[in-house]
Image 1 (cartoon, rainbow, N blue to C red):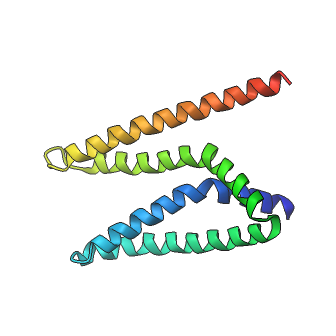
Image 2 (tube, rainbow, N blue to C red; image 1 turned 180 degrees about the vertical axis):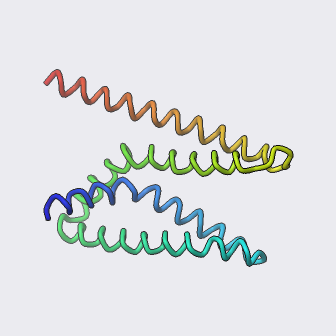
Image 3 (cartoon, rainbow, N blue to C red; image 1 turned 90 degrees about the horizontal axis):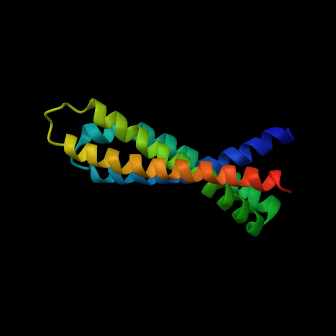
Length: 146
């Protein structure tokens, strides 16, 4: 049982940042689509799933704060989220933009916008992945020289 809770703590910390960003993005898109009922209908299920994830995340975080205290919870969650959540966030933004770009017809006017977003997210994802790899190598070298 202790292993399960430990794995849930890691998973919760890693997915906190990407889940929050995706929830906010989906909610903003849903709120902006008041005049488009078809778009609102398509966004309803992802919004409900992300809201359920947010409620579970808040409940699990409240339980961990009660068990550890606020300072320990924040320091551990922020560190894990910085090292593992930021690259995951970049990847979760890059993959949908890549799929949107591939699905867009070649003669559509929004293809240029999708290409620009794809390039920007690709560069950000590449930089974050490189920084992540450098940090892991740096930590491995530090541990080897202890």
